Image (cartoon, rainbow, N blue to C red; front, side, top):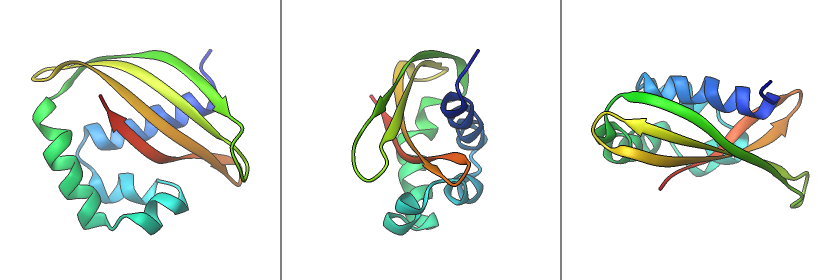
Length: 109
């Protein structure tokens, strides 16, 4: 079974996969929204993510709780195959805000 954090990461990635930039930005954690405008998030996504093409497969590749101040965060990794970009590691950082895990970082590499 997948963890709550992995489920939250997958739901958020579905928004990104659909190029739903405003919705994906709105679904992030407060620290992400404070550091990024919708326009900046959309521009970064369109330059880094869109050229990779459609997702062909996305497999969980581990998760780890990091006990960093103030409340720690969860790192969730996927090994994703894109139509135009081959296999790429996706790494998401999530924090718990209230009862939900919310994405505060997203890296492709």
